[in-house]
Image 1 (cartoon, rainbow, N blue to C red):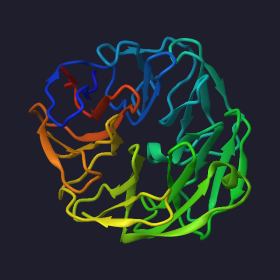
Image 2 (cartoon, rainbow, N blue to C red):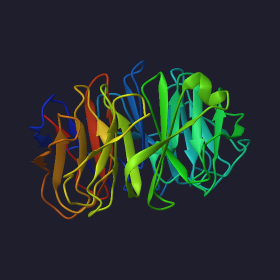
Image 3 (cartoon, one colour):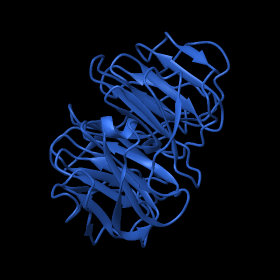
Length: 320
């Protein structure tokens, strides 16, 4: 089976698409991109469990050939600057590769069976890998090598801290999905975070926050739930957040930021994408090819402005 993608390559919200395929359905739950190798990696709950890679900006995708048992749900993926790391949901399983293609090392020595629901729970911050546990506590784990993790309980309250984002200097984390509605946020610098210092912040609405990104100008957060149509943005590193009203009233896929600072997501249930070039104040819709599908996740590299939107059907496309 193939898995559909929409790939955007322009700097505005006017996008047209040509068909591409990936090897299996249910890939794209996790996405990572290496600017060093110009290689994109996708993984998920596909039947084989194996990730797929592209070395031509999403025109062609190939399943890795590494042997062994791969039948896990790989919901976390990062590029650390020297290797790709995949993390399995609910299992002490991790895989790493210097190229994302065929040279993979599997490990069962990681210290926690992660329940990663979204890509925002697994992040690379400077030289530190972060994972949140999606439990009703203040825990997260950090690692400098992707193998040995240190448990930390540094957050200012015992909420479900599940969504990281960074601009390279500061780090923000939000409480929300899958635990439930919240108005809690926390922020820190990379150094202070590992030195046990996070500061509490308040979000402008109590919703199930599901996506948070840095778009070169501000942090922007939203819920993926239709009806929860208030977003939030912060221009001061996560210390204060202002309400952004009027998000499209749809079930929203996970969000991505583009190279020009634009924000982008898809309506999960219809063939429509949405883009904002003014930090979420207004949104422009664009058409996705017709057919019955669920749009689930977005991915891309903010440096090259190569973007992707993933769905669960056998139709695939990329921008032209």
